[in-house]
Image (cartoon, rainbow, N blue to C red; front, side, top):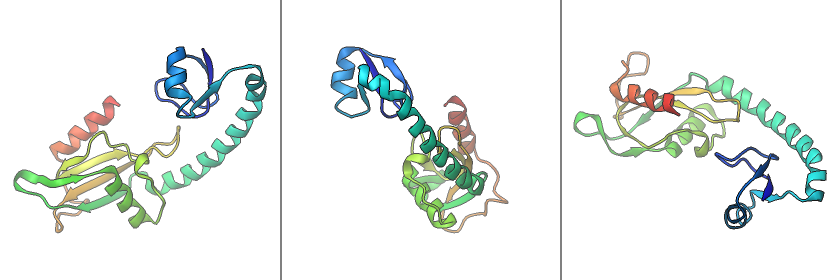
Length: 172
């Protein structure tokens, strides 16, 4: 069945792209979540108009994301967390924690979904974290996680945890 995607669908396509999918996938997954519509004659005729509107909206978003990226690219954020022996945290630092700290430090509205963190941080250390502000704009920030009174970022040496985070980022 041919469908027009209303939203970006991971591993399938981007907004306003016409894709061919299995009937069951369309009926049971795409249509109930309202991320696709049938590619009938009227929808195909309206597709060019939808693309123009979406392109203008994406340009506005790209401009706003570019401004935020200029402020955040290479930014350094410190997050205090209680750690036990060997730097292992009591609990973890999630993407929501990082987004909240960024919003607080830089007075910007950052959503937790924009922080690309494959799994929560569970050890004290220095991490390089990418942000997904827009399809084309992905700045990186440095996050230092440690006890309440820890070494500032400028003098901190990268840890094994930071190397692991960079390896995970390289795989993505």
